[in-house]
Image (tube, rainbow, N blue to C red; front, side, top):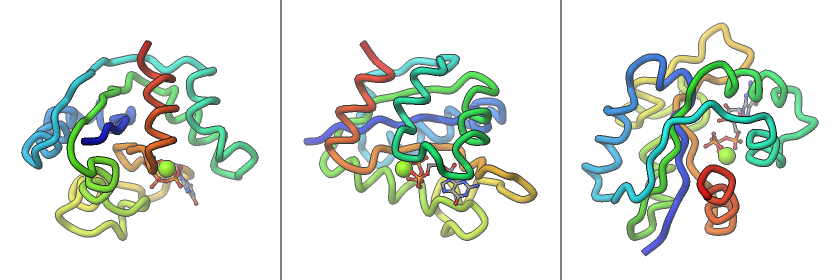
Length: 136
Ligand code: GTP
Ligand code: MG
């Protein structure tokens, strides 16, 4: 079994999609072992997005992630890291496949930052690092 850190970004929380997104993860068979709603602190976002520092979308992304509450969760299950990213779909909502969270529900038109509803860790190392950022 494996663990991953997911975030429901401020667009997802504001649009009332928290339940729908968690429902898809649970329906797939993943267990929610930690769950909290938070207003992200600047240092949490700096740590979470350290790999993107210096990129043109970094500041808009951090501003967006600070724009309202987000939901952080730990999911557990076999190959959940790969599996949740598959459920989430491609980064850009416009081209994310139908059937995925971003493809079915995401909207990115006219935005400097992709309001793509969710984050999911991309490796076991990222998952361990990110879980420690969002949970004690
Ligand atoms: P996460 O699960 O959120 O990490 O998404 P990802 O792994 O599909 O994307 P990545 O880690 O490369 O980028 C993190 C976030 O930055 C994305 O989810 C987008 O919100 C934003 N982002 C990434 N690349 C771009 C880009 O080229 N342009 C813009 N505007 N935003 C981007
Ligand atoms: Mg990523």
